[in-house]
Length: 417
Image 1 (cartoon, rainbow, N blue to C red):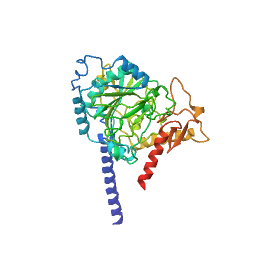
Image 2: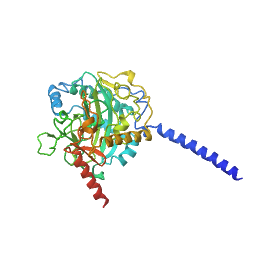
Image 3: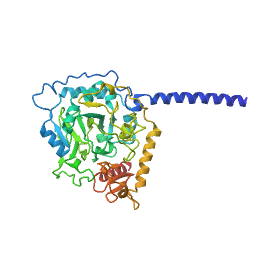
Image 4: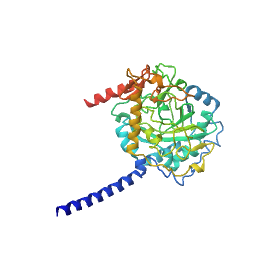
């Protein structure tokens, strides 16, 4: 009887294990788990009439003055380029989309400053794909970058937590260099579309603000970001305005309005360029850019140094390629894969000895054709003297991220009391 019972128990456990395996396999095959649709918006076609923004315009959307300002300052506002009704339709579409792991889990664990975060939206929505791939944004991006070809490398939804942020409303100065899957020499741009009127101050506050020209000084973050700085750029935006910034420009949410900011960010890069996203980025692991770009986590199946192309990084200007509007072949991310990248990143930082007497950054960092080997929020990690570790994150001693992290930690401690 005892032998029979043990045998029966073994069968039951085997069945349960099989069922559990099937359930896990099913969950990992869903859009909720992946954060994107591996089928890549099948059947999606251009459906929006953009003639008001393109052929029916009496003046150029992007002028030579815009291009000069973007090149000099790293940021520019294109006023009233998009019909407000189109932005309303876009907002309706975005609000109708279901949350995935990115919002349901990630924002609640490692991104408390976000109320919602989703990426690769062009794989899930015909309307958003039209905006990102077929609409005029790609041409405007190419014009501002002054390039003949451009690719899309992400389309994101970012909703800030506002007053619900447990660490309080703060700035978070950074460069997008940290999360860019290509060399720093490649021209790139982020097109910000706000779903509401917004400025730096309340009541509709917390818009992105910038230090003009900081994209031209990649290894040295600006020390003066106060309101008295002549280089501080604080846009006041209406629905239908386009805010465009260079990936390398130093910027942050204003941290003053403390409002539920709603925005979409369409990210473009010149083509051709090559893919690079090694675990040399601090931090790395369970954060958005790892899920979006890291090899063996994101499904693009690209190797370090290969051409940046394919359905994950589609050509959008001068025209999309039908050959790239196909299902994404790689596998969705796994917990083991994400933790593996995080471990590699932490090991690299530890081996460099950043912030310690054993720091070797100066000996191993060499600029080769504009390539920097290590990145933090403030830019490339280039010297022992200028970089230190705060909460396991490398920060530039003269940058603003060290101050941001200290404020966040203080607010976190206060909330516990």
